[in-house]
Amino acid sequence: MAQITVQEAIDQALAEEMTRDPRVLLMGEGVATKRHALVEAFGGERVRNTPLAEGIIAGTAAGAAATGLRPVADLLFAPFLCYAMDELVNSAGKLRYLSGGQFSFPLVAIAMTGAGWCVGAQHNHNIEAWFVHSPGLKVVMPGCVADFKGLLKAAIRDDNPVLFFVDIGLVFAAGDVPEGEYLVPIGEAAVRRSGQDISLISYAKTVAVCEDAARTLAEQGISAEVIDLRTLKPLDEASILASVRKTGRAVIVHEASRTCGVGAEIAAIVAEKAFTALKAPVLRLSGPDAPAPASFPLEQAFVPQAAAVVDTARRLCA
Amino acid sequence: MSVKLYDERPEELLQMMHLIRAYEERAAALQAGSGVPGTCTSVGQEACAVGVIAALGADDLILTNHRSAGHLLARGADPGRLLAEVMGRRDGYCKGKSGSLHICARELGVVLTSTIVGGELGLACGVGLSQKMLHRAGVVVCFFGDGAACEGRFHESLNLAAVWGLPVLFVCENNEWQAFVHRRETTLADGVVSWAAPFGMDSATVDGNDVEAVRAVAMEALDAVRSSGKPFLLEVRTYRLRGHFEPDDQAYVDAQELARAWSCDPLPRFEARLRDCGRLDDDAIAGMKAAAKSRVEAAVAYAVDSPYPGMDELVTDVYA
Ligand SMILES: Cc1ncc(C[n+]2csc(CCOP(=O)(O)OP(=O)(O)O)c2C)c(N)n1
Ligand SMILES: [Mg+2]
Image (tube, rainbow over all chains, first blue to last red; front, side, top):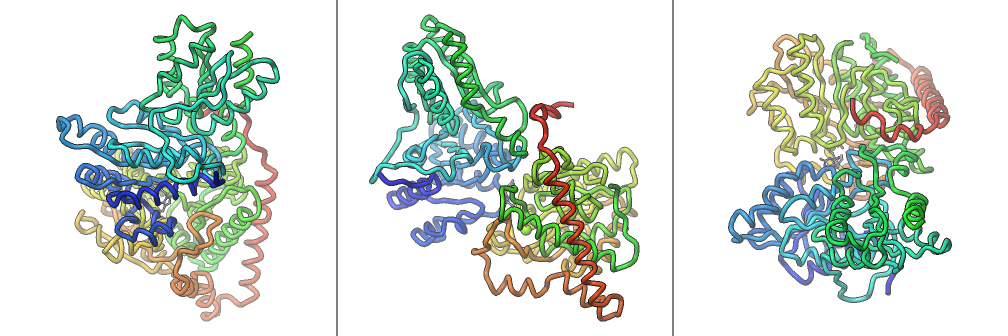
């Protein structure tokens, strides 16, 4: 095992997949400036700085994906995806279906989001659920370094458009990544800690918040299971349901705003398919239905905290 | 603080340029040293902001972007409140919610600031439409970068403003950089100004490191907008002397090009002109710099003293 950062994990995944498959290319505003090693290794044809125009980056990616290339588009910060929305949602997400299956769109759109850099709501907006709601797209949001590598490699190999969200709070996080070829399948959740009394279901940086909470809960005699979703679409329903059927209680934790967030979908799945196993209502802890502020303490307060997870879990287990 | 209006004296322009430079350098130093959030500084572009804004009247409105401190200060913003905003403090212009990237100050006519590159261009059309339909006198001045001109929104905005005859002065500060990408990598045209004519819009280019030239051209452009009611594109040629977002080591910038750009620094250039024509001597210039520095030090003290917003602010101002 080697300790690397999320940044390095992303670089490794890109380099390995570009080596493996000459159809893979990387484009975005400044990717060739910032990822110099990739330019050296693969040349300017395959690592392209683009004009400052997200719509055309995503449009080009979709057109190229449909006709033989496998583009990875770095769109920087998630709110900038708004400019690329048409190309991702209306083109990449729908034109396979609308063409009766004649085309596929093997592309990856990478974007950062989340609290941590005090950059405010035009850079920090957890909009992953928008894409979960859009047909034809897959959505990935890793919570640990190894998953960044393994899921990005899987996303590049996937024949569908994949939105790959990078939590800003994790960019400089370091962790172990297995040596050699390492893939994490899209659509599989991970049990980060197993427990009997309550399921804490999360993704991205709030997985660590849940793990913190689980440690505190353990000291108080409550055994919490922590599920890292990793992929938001397709959701790993089987893992969610297996956990909730075992524990009978669930708290879903994410930084994205509450209304129509991923947590709402999970609560609905649990209500529909595991109702009889429930010993308590399913609860959500999330960011508020507000834009993310820049001010440091407010930005921190936007994110669900371990203490709140502990309180909520204790109430449900009482 | 109220809108700052400028008289004919060139010293006023120089004083303001020094204030902006001192503010930006102090902010960058704070960011390098402590946990103060980073900013996109306008170092090198002071003559653009001051030249254009010194040509404005009290009723004119400004829209800006992520690189806004020069525009705000030139329009009369209080450096203490500005820095407080950058630091996310309660006394900032936006209660600390904006941070550095979307600072607007309605009381100064700096009406909307978008850090979505190109966002301000679309908004400027709407502000122009309000001015026109509500029969308000002020011209709308929209600052944006050469990078923003690559967004489709730029072309859509110019077209709409031209077709609808909106009173907008589009000011492109072409600083040769679009974050970490040089302009020459993104456009084959040498500048942005040539994009005006196909939309039927009048335009001009000016040396953006010559504050008096910028002011003179801006005055003509504003007169044209006022008298015709039609939009105008002004391209101001300058250079981003510091990095994109502090801290930034500029390792990706060609050293010779950067050195050449520093040799065209608009501040010493203007000082030399005023010295040559006998309006200012070295002591006067030193006095100006010292005054700017002490204003900025007072601003730092004010910002550091300002408390963070209360937790209730997390969910206020979401809806009207
Ligand atoms: C839609 C969008 N894309 C990308 C960014 C990231 N970004 C912020 S400023 C910037 C460069 C802007 O270049 P330019 O318009 O020339 O303005 P300058 O920074 O040079 O003043 C970039 C890419 C953004 N804020 N918004
Ligand atoms: Mg620029």
